[in-house]
Length: 194
Image (cartoon, rainbow, N blue to C red; front, side, top):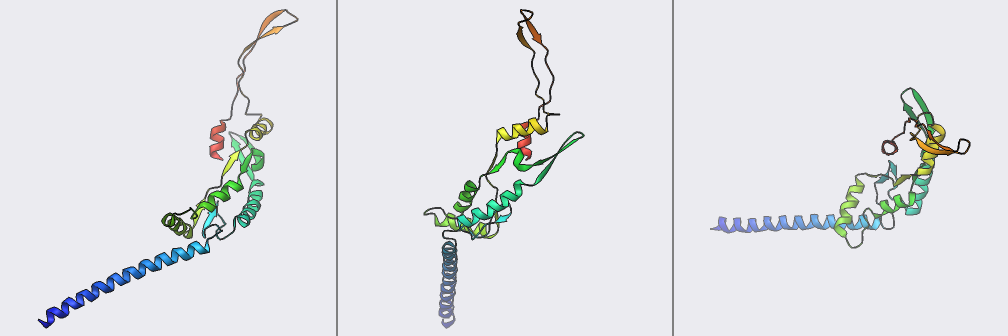
């Protein structure tokens, strides 16, 4: 009988120990995420990157300055365009590429900073700690792209023209102008490839 009572007490103590270990682990995890939230308050979550540029731990203003410098350098880079046997060198800025730094910073700031959603914030901050790389918010200025096509790619970007009926005042009659074949650069594919 002594052995049986001793074993029951031992089993209760093991069960109690396992419960206490589980509670301590749970509290340590909660404490970790609470401290992480405090460290990331008014800052972009640690480990966050935009296009490979680390902005984690910066205030939104500091991240904006860092991204502005990196964007200016990036938009000055040359891009080599090739079509059949023709080659062109273009500066990215001339293609009408614009990076919206404010929208990118807002998107990065929201990572791990949603209101009243502790579990979602904790999960996002944990992902960011592992190195979360966001894509920048960017767009292409259609007018600048069209100007680039007209100035630089005029040898291949020649839209086709339909034949038209034009009134000729000298002949006092209508004259048909001939149609012209052309080659058009697929802008949607061009944008997607950029």
